[in-house]
Amino acid sequence: MTSSKASFTQDSLFDGKLTCFQGRTGYRFSVDSLLVAHFCKPAATDKILDIGTGSGIINLILSHAHKDISCCGLEIQKDLYDLAQKNVLANKFSERIQLVNGDLRNISQFFDPESFDLVVSNPPYRKTGTGRINSQSQAARARHEIDCTISDVVKAAAFAVKNRKSVVFVYPAKRVSHLIATFHVHKLMPKRLQPIYSYPGAEEARLVMVEGVKNGGEEMKLLTPFYIYAEKNGPYSAEMQTIYNQ
Image 1 (spheres, rainbow, N blue to C red):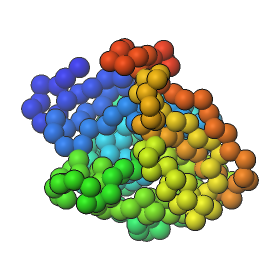
Image 2 (cartoon, helix red, strand yellow):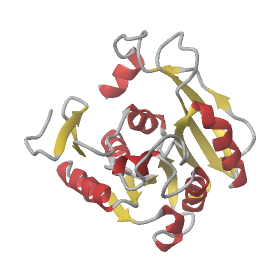
Image 3 (cartoon, rainbow, N blue to C red):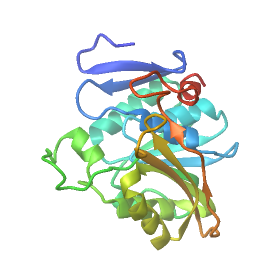
């Protein structure tokens, strides 16, 4: 569904149960956000932080799926923060989702240490210098390590999450070794890892979703692959369709 306003689209999820305004240009959420929100396993009354919340889509999905949690989103870009506020109001989540416009590198200015039960992030994927980018564009700042590095994001997550509680990241499969190494630096032990493939038979995973536990043990579960599409150039897989229909 698309709004009549020239600068925004109004997209719906879950048979219209959730709505999300997005800019027609600039950063727009992708399937990554649905996948990582589904991968999270919050307890009934958990307090959740989404670092780099963008339009707020992960918090919206989590609040839709888990009726008793409370969420907070941290976003450095003022225009995206304003858009997330619009989405919170549109979905009547004002009492359950709080937003902060600020820099994750200064996270201690906004939150007390170890104040969240779960921290989730869909961080910038790409290093600066990989291709030509406009460092001031909304999409570039969301996708490239311009405002922060993955180390900055993991450090912020480790600061915010309670001891023995979880952080969840979605990240390119090609850079997973760097993500896991950074987890270890900040005493986040990987506990679940799921590779995401475009379709069965694809040569390489596109993404990984990783859950780490602060000061957790060594054991990690390598989960079965998740396929976005049923086949190459085909429809969504049954698993992906289930996520859309929740």
